[in-house]
Length: 445
Image (cartoon, rainbow, N blue to C red; front, side, top):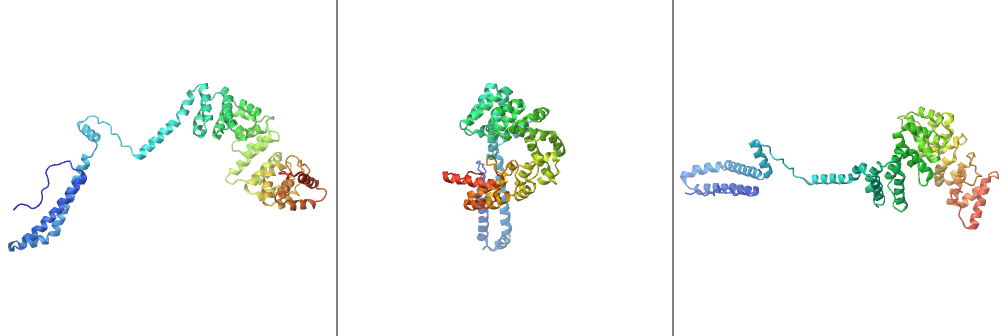
């Protein structure tokens, strides 16, 4: 009698892993089918009854054996498939290794993430092409590169290249470079702040005195950050010369900010040393600016002192220049504390109502009546209430804000003031003239 079980083919047709798996599953199912048919076919034969019972008792065990065989066949097929699916490069690599010759290098398959990283590297290389080339440029090429970057609408994409070019400019090229960038800006293409900062900083390294001369010639649009960037470059190149320049007495208000930076830099982080340096120079803008550095030093300490404590500890020779600095520092942290400090120290030498304009404006917007009545009691100094031109006394500033918010109430209050308050009569007269001419009161008047 022939075996009813199907036979597996002895030929390997290069089946895929999925085909090998399906074949193994069919073998397992066919084996179970044959087993149950055999038990059913021979169960009625008496001589075979023991066999049938034996088979019935061992059915579960045989099923387990057949299942294990099927699993083993499946795993063998997977291993064969995995081996056959190895790349030809890997097979050549192994074969060469067995022969004792140098194998060819394996190329790693690039993933999506790898491609992204490579793409980023290429972008960085392209972006840095300009900076790397800048040191090799001629004068004409450097200025042409700046001109190209200056007229680019999205010049933020050119910032790194432009800064690299600026960093390689020679002293005799700086004025031309500033004119190129300034012309593009005047014609409607604003330049990135980083570009201007780099320009002033580099000019400070290669020819600082010419840069400050340029600031004197054309101060329009220049600020303290511009001159301080120039001074930073000078301090890096020649700090001794920078400090000597800073201590000269003929500094303009704009230059005073740069001079203060040089003096503060020379003191390091030592407030006592800085105080001694400030006492060596005349009163004025340089001192006031440099004192800001002193307040910063004190505030940066772990147990930093308040602005009022710093002021109280100063030598009398520095308090006059420190009055306005103290008000501004207090106003940043707590306006009510600043208001109380002004009340207590308004009679000190150096009382400077120019420094109070910011806080008086803010207080008057919140409470114009209360601020005007508070400011009325502040003593007069060189900026008197009667002075109707230039920076106003705090009472005039607060009253003007009150009149903008409630003119009727403000005018009624002005009329209640005694005759010795001439500023009030002057202000009312000015208001009447403006009303008759149809012009509203100007800010601060």
